[in-house]
Structure formats: structure tokens, C-alpha cells
Length: 416
Image (cartoon, rainbow, N blue to C red):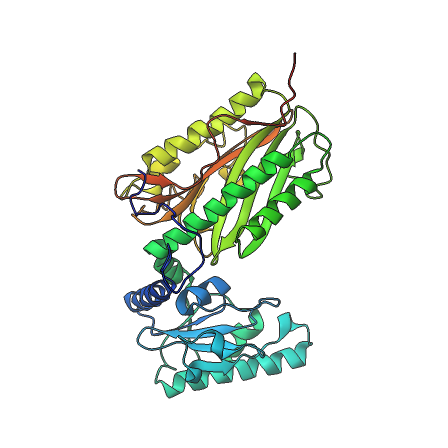
């Protein structure tokens, strides 16, 4: 259903003084903070200590260098402004929506690398600082939400007398249904990935290595505005399991190349976007069959998506372990999968046979998702397809534009 959210991208991702453009960042910051506070109130959590970068970014619209785990963190509250614990060197002038009095210096023990005594001393000082902030607000006796922390930090908080509860589901709940500006961020990264898939299509030819194609894809993503790129996964030609870890394999005529642009981001919003390419020649009947099976299952799920349907109903369309010749769904939890996309690769909703048949989530309008289906044949390799989309009032709007119904032939060899 094209245009359900008014999402045709009429310009790029830059902001201008004369036009808001497709994304209103001030509105997005305000709405994300409001949704965080609403979710905390709904779940009876007055304060939460966030360490995961995507949660900090969602609640406070701030980001900084993340070269060490838990380098920075934030106390967020159901009823008042957040407190940001920042690493040295961060300029508070970069984030004018955060008042100077909301900033504190973070305490770091660098994954316990300074040694037992030094790490424990820093963790204890960290916990005492958090307790002091909560005491001043009258919240030290309330449950404190935690999304992720190492064991030294957890022990220090407990010894400081704080009662910890899991806040990760609360943050995922807040992030599940996207605002119009978040949806446009997902749309934007999909458009950037469209360009990268096309650049890689042009680069695929006999004699290049998988790593050469990967380099072209990463270069295209960065040049076209991706904020960050986790990886471009390239596999070809019947490799064990379908994934190459060294990417030194030379592409040959007749190979099937499967490419996944995984966790490329625009304003933090993630991609997950597969396509299959046949090198130089037309796909064989066997290869067409693998491609078509993935396509058919993927679109059975996509065509069924609408607000109110459950992930269990959608998961009935996925291949069973028995059909794949496997003993358990645990061996294929991400072979056939629909998953939420946002500031992380996997958000609500999750739809597969392993989890969703027993614990189904409900699909809602405004969720942004990736839907993927995979086949594997030892003579062909791994073939996988994936679309990126948003759930609309009447179904879905597909963002990914690179052709998908038929396997794409790259560098065709013309025969007389």
C-alpha cells in the first residue's frame, strides 16, 4: 500500500534552515522521550539505568564513541528529565536539548581490565553515585530498571542497597511502534541499501573476490549517508553453511552470490536486506527452485501482515524443521524470520516458529520490520531473500526496491 504514511522520499536526509525535510529531528527527539516515559509509567518503574547505546539514544537522543562496553550510561525517569553520565571529552554543547545540570561524569572499569581491586573500586564508586542521585530524588527505595550491566556493576548496585528489575522489555515496548520520523529513518537506510545493492551488482563478475564485493558495498553505504556499517555479508558457490568468514573466495561463472546488508544505519536505524545474484549465466532449474521457495514463503508472510494479526499466525507460513530435514527449530531460528527493525537489529515483533508459536506477539500499525526466508543446497550454497517494510492500516508498504521476484543475473555472458 504505497504512501500510507506519506513516505515517498522527496529529498535526502540533510536538515535545512528553509525546510524540515522528510525527518523532523526535534519532533523525533520529543516523541521518543515521551514514549520512554509512558512505558516506564505503564510498567510501574520510576527510574531506569540504561547502558545499551540504542536505549540511551532512544530516551535522550544522544550518542558518543562506544569503543568500550558501558562507556556511558543514563538515568531516565518516568516523571522528570534524564541524567546523562558522559565520558570525558564529550562536549555538552553538541546536545543543546540536554541542560548542563543534567550531565555527570561516567565511571568506567573497562570490562574489568584494570584488575580485580581497581575494577571493584570503580564499580563501587559508580554504584554509590547512582544511589546518591536516587536518594536526592526520593527514589532509592523504588525498583531500579536495568537493561544491561556486567557482573561487577550489578554486584555493586545490589550491595549499595538498590533493588534491580529488568527494563529491557519496557524499552523494547516503547520502541516497537515507530513515529513518522523513525519510519522515515528506516525508509532512508533502505534507500541507501538499494544503492549499495546496485553498486555490488555492478561489481559482481568472474575473478573478483567476495571481499572485493563487500568493499564496494561498504563504500557505497558510507558515501550515500550511512552513519555506521556493521557488515556486508557476501557468500557464494556452495560454501559450508552458506557463509564465508574469510571472504577470500574467488567468484566464478555460474556461482550464486547471496548478499546481506546487516546493520547499516541511518540516524541509528538499522537495515537487514538480502538479495541473490547469479553470476554470468541464467539460473539453473535447481537454483530457481531455491530462490522461488524463499520468495513464496517470504511473501506469504508479508501478504498476511496487518494490524491485529499475531506472530503465531504468521509463523505458520514458515518452513518446519521437519521440512528442512532438521531435528529442531533451534537449528533454524533465523532461517525464516520476521523481526522488528529500529535502533537495533532485532526489536518487537519477532516472528519465527521457535518462539512465536508458543509466545506470539501482536502486529501493530507503525511497526517497521524485515521479513526473510532462506534455503540451502550444498551444490548451490545459501540463498536468502529479505524485504524491509512498515506495517500500515491495511497491510504493508515495502521500502526495499531492488528486484526480488526473480534471481538477478550479474555480468551476463552473451552467447552468439
